[in-house]
Each structure stands twice: as C-alpha cells, then as structure tokens.
Amino acid sequence: MTAITFRNARIVDPASGHDALGCLRVVDGQIDDIGDGIEQDHDRVIEANGAILCPALIDLRAAIEPVFTPSGETLDTLAPSAAAGGIGTVVIAPTDTMPIDTPEAVAGLKSAALPNPVRILIAGGATQSLAGEHLAEIGLMAESGAVFVAQGDRPITDTTALRNLFNYAAGFELWIAVPARDPFLSSGTVATESEAAARNGLVTEPAAAERLAIDRLATLAELTGARLMIDRVSTAEGLDALARARQRGIEICATAAVSNLALNAVDADGLDPAYRLMPPLRSEADRRALVAAVASGQIDAVVSDHRPMSPDEKAQPFSEATPGSTGIEILLPALLRLVHEEELNLVDALRPLTAGPADLLGLSQGRLEAGAPADLVLIDGDAPWVYDAAAGRSARHNSTWQNRRFQGQVLMTIVNGGIVRNLREWS
Image (tube, rainbow, N blue to C red; front, side):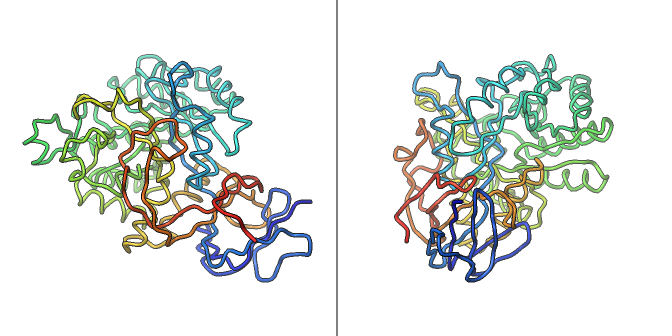
C-alpha cells in the first residue's frame, strides 16, 4: 500500500464548495479521507503550509500537430506541459490540420496516450476533414473512445447538413461541440468589430454573429434532441442567447477560452500576431460579462485552447497569421489572476476547471471526496512569476502570454495517486 497525507493544506473542492484548512490522505491512487490528523505511521507526509490543494484541472480543448510536422507538438510534449499547469486530464480536440475524423484516428491516439503521465482523452471530428460536407462515423468513433465530437473552428453553412449531424450525434447521447460563429458574418474575419479594428483596416466580426449562431444551433438542438456544447462563447450577446436556450429546456452547455476571460481587444490593437486568436479578443464589456458568467455557473468549462503553431505560421502580418497560441501552462495562473484582482472568488474560478468539465463528461475525477481518483494539484496561490514560453514544456513557443506576470504557481500535480509534477522537495 502506498499512502500520502497532505497536512495543513487549504483544501478547496469546487464540487461541494468546501474551502478550509485540513488534511487529505491518498491511498493506492484514491482519496481515502479528508479531515484533521488523519495520517498514519507509514504515510509519506507532505507539509503544505497553507498551500491550496484542489482537484487536478480538466482541460476540454487542447491540440497537437500531425506526427510528420517538424518539431511539432506531440502527446509526449503536451503531457508534461499539462502536468506543469496542474492539469490532470486533457482532451485532444480536432483541428483543420489534425481532424481526428475516423474511428482509427481516435483509437490510435487513445492507445498512444496511455503511457503519458496525465489522462488524455480524445474528441472526434464531427465531419470529414471538418469541412462540414460529409458526416464522420460518429457512432464508430464513440465505440473507439471519443468523449464528444467537435467541429473545430469551421461553422457548417448547410443547415440541413447541420441538422443531420445533430440527429446523428443525438443517437449516441454525445455532446457535440460547435463554434459560435455565423457562417457568413464570421467568414474571413480576423478581429472583433471595433473602432480600432476599423482604423487598421481589419475584416471584423460583430458580436451579433455569435448571437445569431447560438440561436441557430439551439433551434436545431431543440428540433433534434442533440446535446449541444457551445464551443468558446466570447460575447455578452452570445451569453444572452445561451441563457434564452436554457430557459427553453434545451440540453446546452458552454465553454470559454481563458484568453477571452483574461484579455480584451485592446491587447490586439498593436497588431502583434501573437494576439491573433479564434475567437478573437473581444471588448472589455464582453470580457466582464464572461467573468460574471463563470461566477454564476453559466460557463460550464474554461479551456486553455492550447494551439501550438510553427514560427512561420505566426511570423506573418496580423491578418495573415494563423490564429492560435500555446497556453496550457497558463490556464490556472490566468484564472488565479482574476481571483487576485477580486473579479472571481477561488471556488468559482476553479469550478469550470474541475467539477464543471467532469460533470459534462461523467468523469469521476474533478472532486475531493473519499473514493474519488487522487488527481490533485498543490498550488502556491501567491507566488509571483513571469511566463517565458521558451522555458515551458511545449514543443512550440508561440504565446499570447509571453512575458506576462502572474501570481500563483503549481507546486505539485498528482494523477491517480502518482506525482507527475514536483517543483521542489517536500518533507
């Protein structure tokens, strides 16, 4: 039997709202007990000295690159990056270059992920090559282990094809993640609609495009009974549409990218291609609305949207640069910054990183209770540091977060009772 006791930790469990000093004991990969003075003679005791102990994070959207990509992000480079960010479970989501649109692709990635130190789950591509023209074999992908299906960044133009997709996914009770992008108002856009973007001659996307997209998607979900995941909502108008859909009893959930919670369109006004993201950075009013939606529970999961890019893909003029940024190591620190700035309390900030995504996918991790998997993260909530992408574990260094200051650092990550990240020696 292997046993570890964390002593004098600030134990935070967003699933129950618990936030208090105490001890937590791990035995053979599971949480054994939570309380005071619970360690036994043969336990390894870790003196936390008031550090935060919470469930390891669950990230529903990260990407890797095809195996033939020179120096690209692989499962083997993504996993240590996730562990460094306090993430115990990460979902590989499909992209244009890595569509994951066959059962063989899902099964192959699932098998290849097994030796890695964190839990890696796979989302299948909803349509072939994510082009929206032909449905992928969703049923066979589900049998191969896909935890949900996703359409990536491309909205499907043909409403009949979209209805057929929803009908198909509904038959397997899979969440279908669809971008909140109107097929026409969002086409070819590179920035949110604003005076600064107009002055810079950028092709812009109005916030109304997101509202229109969600209204359309929700109507089809209501028609078909599909489980609809709004993939990276980013505007106040989109949140209003989401609320209306929920009032109608539609089975709908929503994720938000951490960049849209922590940054706004002003950050992109200098036309630095590092800030070319999808969805684009929005107004400060939109950012604040997203933060309020996290606090109220309207946002079910916050995602890193970790999207590694080659230097050539980012070293272009803003409009021509490929959207995306590495950021899996920044998911937690960016949310902690909102806590320090008193925009969120700690429990609310951690809920869409733990219990929220766990509940969506029916995972047993993401909560602190006896018998749950011992997927944990120990955090120094006050440690100041500066992010340097080149010093990170990712194979790629394109990052919106380069040289930004944060307060809050992962000290230790535990997955299934094993320590997969350890920043320093412990008693």
